[in-house]
Every structure is written in structure tokens, then in C-alpha cells.
Amino acid sequence: MPRVDYFAYGSNMLEERLKRRVTTVAFRAIVALPCYRLRFRKRSEDCSGKCDIFHTRCSADVVHGVIFDLDDSQLEDLDCAEGRGSGYHRDKITLHLADGSQTDAWVYLADPGAIDEALIPYSWYYELVIRGAEQHRLPNDYIAGLRAVPFTADPKPDRKAKREAEAALANYYLNRERT
Image 1 (tube, rainbow, N blue to C red):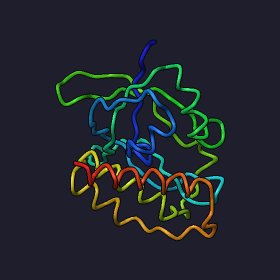
Image 2: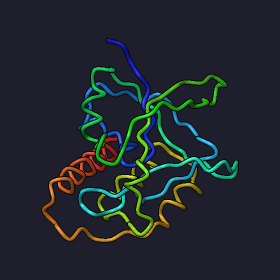
Image 3: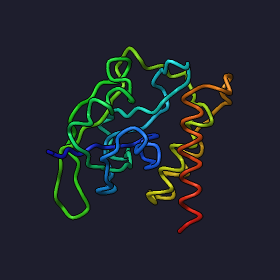
């Protein structure tokens, strides 16, 4: 099967979460995307803020993330998990790798109508992002910036997405104990 690259910058950086969504995924590289900024301002169906990135034209801005490769046949599964058509759209982005090469990767970007600057993430979503950044050893100052983001408790403690996130996080902690 043909393979495609996917750039994860939010909750899908945590491999245990992404592998629950698409089964043929494999880590490829860590990458920095200059002139972009990450915010938790994409409106979700659960009324919280999810990650989005946007172009700033400012070279001081950078988004760090992870490139994964996966079977292109699984893009529809990832589209469904990411809410493509419900606030996110999928686009191609050119990423420059540490070895000097470049790759085109799929990325999910928030639709302009799905952005709300007042939103903040729920604690379970926030933890997925933080643990994914730690798992891939993104720069300490970048992780510190992520940790500075305010978050709130989910008012629905039995939400399906919350339970799925907690299961991915439990697998992450279990895998850490084994290594």
C-alpha cells in the first residue's frame, strides 16, 4: 500500500492516541515548522478548545510536531477522528527535516468559522498534548509554553472522548513503566 506522511502537532503526537485512530502508523521524524503558531482555539463539539496552527509570517514563531507515516487507505479513518468537514480541513504542507531533506505531509487546519479565541482545552485533552510533546522530547521551552496554557475540567466526566483519552494516557504510562 502507498504510504503518506502526516504532521501531528496536537493530541495525535501521543502515539498511544494516534494508534487507536489509525493502525498502520509509524514514527518518522520530529520537525519544527517556522512562521506558525499553535493555539487551543478550534471549537469542538464538546465546547472546548482543540489545537490548531496558523501561519503568522513571523520567523520567531514555530510549531514543533511529529511526522508519522501511514497507509493512505487510513486517511479516511484519520479524517473521521479529526472531524474533517466539521471544523478542520486537511491540507498538504512542506516540512524541512533535520537532515536537509523535505517532505510533503498532510496536516489538519482549523476552518476560520471554527475558531474561538475564548476557548480553552479540557484537562484530558491538554494532557494528551503535553504527554505527546514529552514522549517525542520536543524542546523544553516549547513544552513549557504548552504547560502555560490554561485548561479546565470537563463538565461531563463520562464523556466518550474523555474515556478514550484516558485509555490512551493509561497505555502511555504503562509503556513508560516498561522502558
